[in-house]
Image (tube, rainbow, N blue to C red; front, side, top):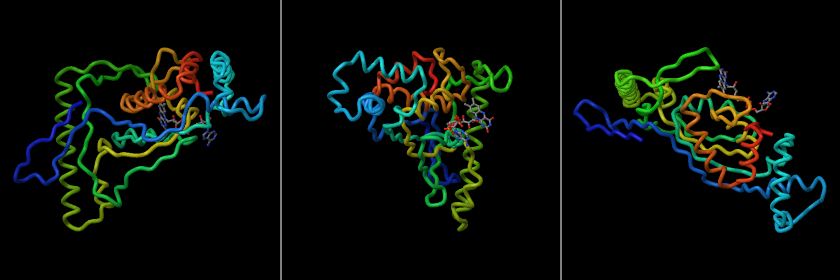
Length: 252
Ligand SMILES: Cc1cc2nc3c(=O)[nH]c(=O)nc-3n(C[C@H](O)[C@H](O)[C@H](O)COP(=O)(O)OP(=O)(O)OC[C@H]3O[C@@H](n4cnc5c(N)ncnc54)[C@H](O)[C@@H]3O)c2cc1C
């Protein structure tokens, strides 16, 4: 991760920009375990059961979760909840908010607070060159010159736009108007709440994974968010996670 706070000069307004090449995903609250899936599924055949009863036979539990995933009985995977705090560039949020089903969002406001100058600049290992056709691009390493050009252009544009934002605020212009000048590389933050089923659908579209039956070609930056969510979810629901991978990473 790079975080460069450059020194203040007489001309530059405060606060100084911070440039980030990573994203933050923190699981802040959850009620999600494999037993929630069993609990919901077994009401079909056995009525109400205690958690102890459900967890008595681990092989049977695993078998049931596998069956539900394979045959796409999706609703038992909805009886759980995970809330993530996500900090990422606005262009990632723009893609993220297209996921409507089984997701709830609350994002920081550019009307009610002054936006902080935290901006995205790709890391040195972010592939910069795209080849192929829309929907099926392949990405290749950029040269050192291309990385330099990207870093310089972005940092320069970010500084200029944030300076103009500050000028408008200083002139008494409302935050909701002044923000129009800020770019999509600006970081935003949100709480995003989902369940395992909606998360699986998101992961199927926003990660590129060899185990996927239906390949997807997501933008790398939303994939960085998805990968962090996936790791945290895998710890909460290991059997569901395993079944998701076994059955081609298709949401049931
Ligand atoms: C690689 C990639 C490239 C993309 N490129 C573009 C692009 O160029 N332009 C663009 O606009 N978007 C683009 N998208 C966004 C994409 O079109 C979807 O909006 C996004 O992936 C969310 O998918 P979803 O609608 O399945 O998810 P959700 O909104 O979470 O919906 C989940 C599921 O619920 C059902 N559902 C939800 N709403 C409805 C409804 N109204 N009617 C019927 N069924 C519904 C569907 O089965 C859907 O799959 C891209 C996405 C990816 C992954």
